[in-house]
Length: 102
Image (cartoon, rainbow, N blue to C red):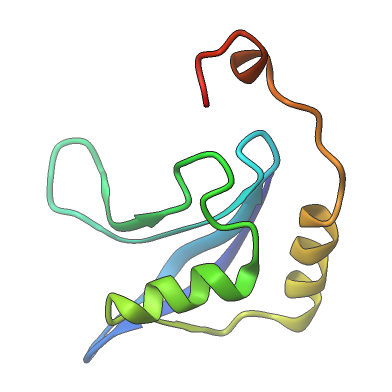
């Protein structure tokens, strides 16, 4: 799993500790940002939690934009590394093989 720190903006607010990455077991890019003010530390935005939900980097960035968020400070080398990781062939997880994840 890759995790890269980015800046995420929504209106005048920014989160300089937001995370963008790729999760091989889910075969999806994910994005987390703006930690909520609750006891659980749940992010305000958390995309890419479902199997193959965002198989492309472009798809997750567009989904964030559709919710009013803008991804900033995504390093070119980090982008290439994530795309290389996403381009690998991953076998189904044990949970998939057992039918827990469809």
